[in-house]
Image (tube, rainbow, N blue to C red; front, side, top):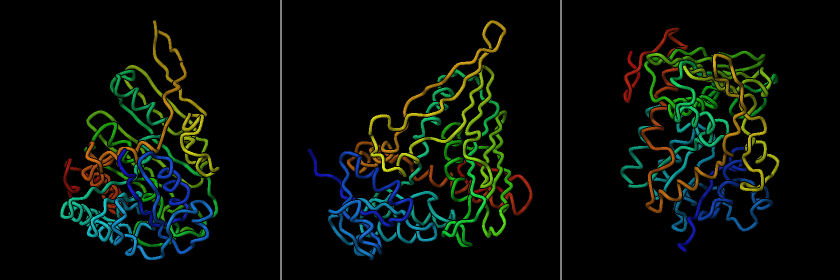
Length: 353
């Protein structure tokens, strides 16, 4: 057995505490060695053996650290990632990768120069409902998909006092949930021909966007990505309509709620979908409906793949090319809203002006 990979987690707010820390702790071969936080008591209440420092540079300089996970506010993703890479550490950055494509390209360049791996935490690739949809697309059950609706709505009528809701680089719902929905669409169908976005503020007192409605155009397929803060979370998650069948799913993946409740990743029932989707197909000229149970989701798969990549057993769970593709679409969506038009895309390059 090789020694575990020692991890430094930068940030112990909601994302660091609820997502990254328990997933790291319950992924074999990884050890949460250090947490960068100004609240040692909060960290030690959960991980009494972890080292705690308020200085991220001290963690980066520690030769015991193999991997740095950045769960800090979006505006500091790029400088922290570059500093960690230059210190010789592998890096995982929570989504969004950075606040701009230019920043993202500089992070990738720093990784290449340091000969270290950098990846983005796209955990929603391992949602149970997305895994079910992906299987239906890839095995041909739906035929050629002509229409996909991907929603991630929340019911938060009051604007909370947190950094994501304050004006600044990388704030707002498009940079919060957009990376997940864009990454899932790219995983299923590759790069679109164009993007047209309507990104807006709807709640009273909002100073950053809390709504988006985005159309990705393919030769035949149309993908609609939607999120709002005034919609109960039990609404539509996926609706995929193809030439041979249609799949629909309501409600969100259960893993975030389980993590919030303190359920240990991998516990009995972990990642099982509490509300399986529905498949409708035409059989003998009549519609036939069936339940799609799918497989359980498991966000630990991201960290297992990252562990294997560090040990030389494969590529990063989210490659730098995939990370840059999402950043291009985030920027193109923002530009589409400002300019009031569809932005044509040249796959693999920056949006066409």
